[in-house]
Image (cartoon, rainbow, N blue to C red; front, side, top):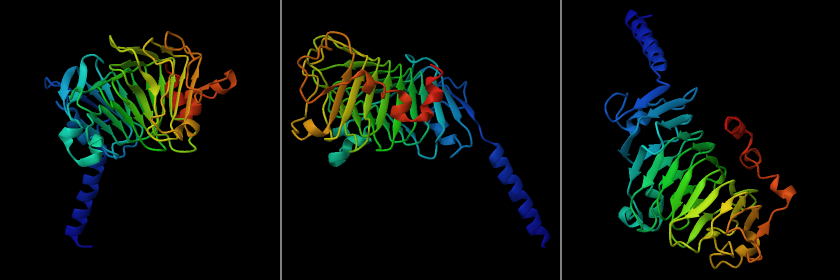
Length: 321
């Protein structure tokens, strides 16, 4: 074999080996220059694609004015903030600003998660556009994504969860909004979250695909409202097979006595599935609920566990709580 070719092959192998070993599984983002990066997106872009184990990006306190994207190839990625109230990602896109036609909503995100197995903790994500129409703070397309002790703050369409085979878990999070501010086709379980309505409107707008057993499930959550908010519906169907359930939640006085709305889609009254179980509070009186909603039995309620709703993968996270 030609000597030059042998040398070239040796250096190629060495270079490939070094490239594989030069993988950082722990990175720090800090605006003061004390970390590996000063911007969150720069750290994400530096992360190895399709890693063999989880990569964790620690984000120091600061206000990060960024539109952050977690691409599909950056799976097994964690973003861990230093303090939920002081580690803030903020942007201000909205429907008319994007101006890309009827689907402009889906480009307005502050944080976009396209990757599977994403984990976020101690982060505040804000769409700061104000009351100007559709303006997404969190947009999730991946599967098996977990959000713990995070805040998602916005107005209309704050949290968008999409993907007919996607499953997500929210634990101890705070979500604020005005209209349809938790919406989409994914299956999601919200555990001990605070849901804050900022206007008389609708909390959820599920578009659960037909034949999916669950859509949005809220367990032991607290529903509160800003001052002067007094008429809020638990949900309305973006698509007619919407599924949403509230179990063991505290419902504030602002929740409508009817509870649910059909979005002027009469067919949804027989195709959608809206349910409650043992809720408490001024908004939990069920005697005037729409007659096409459901009060779960004890036996039915037993099916609404994180593992049954999302799959066995969530057990590892739930067991640590």
